[in-house]
Amino acid sequence: MTESSSLARGLAAAAALLLAAGAASAQGVPDIIGPNGSFRLLPDGASWEKFQTVRQIGVKCVDKACGGERVFCTIQTRADEKARPGVTLPDETAKAFGDGVLANAPKEFKTDYVAPFTPRRFGPNAGHWAELKAEGAPGNLRFGLFLVAAKGYDVAFNCVTPSESWAAHQPKIEALLASVHITQ
Image (cartoon, rainbow, N blue to C red; front, side):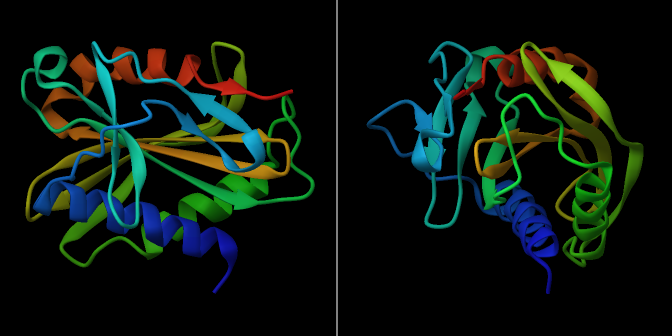
C-alpha cells in the first residue's frame, strides 16, 4: 500500500466513522499544530472548535454556526521531504490521493468526484482542491479535499458536510482553509 492510499483510506474511514458514531470533543489547547510546527490552525471558537478522537484530529463547526448539522474537517499529514511551503504539490500527488480516497471509501458509500483536483488557493495557501460525493448509509455526504505543502509534509484537509447543505457551508470551509498558517 502506498502512503497516499494509506492517507486516503484514513480520510475516507474517518468521514464514515465520524458521521455514524459522532466525534468525541477534546477540549484543552484549542489550536492544532502540525508536526515540527509545519502548520498551525487556530479554530475561532465561534464557528469552529477542535476535536480529537483516538485516530483523528480536526475541527468541527459549532451547532450555532452550522444549524446543528455535522460539518467537520479532519487533518492528516504525510512526511514528504520534497514538500515546501508555497510550492504546490505535484499533480500526480493529488491524483494518487484522490484515487486512493475513491478506492478506499467505505463499502456503504458510492463515492465519486463532483470536481476533480485542480490548483486552488485559499488565502495565502496554494494547493489542490477537489470535491467528492458519497452516497449511502448513513447518509449522503459532500467532501472538499484540500492538499497543501508544508515544510517536509503533505497536509490533507478533508472537509465534510451533508450533501444537501454543501452550498451553505462551503464558504465557512473556504474561510477556515484560508486561515491555516503554513510555517515558512
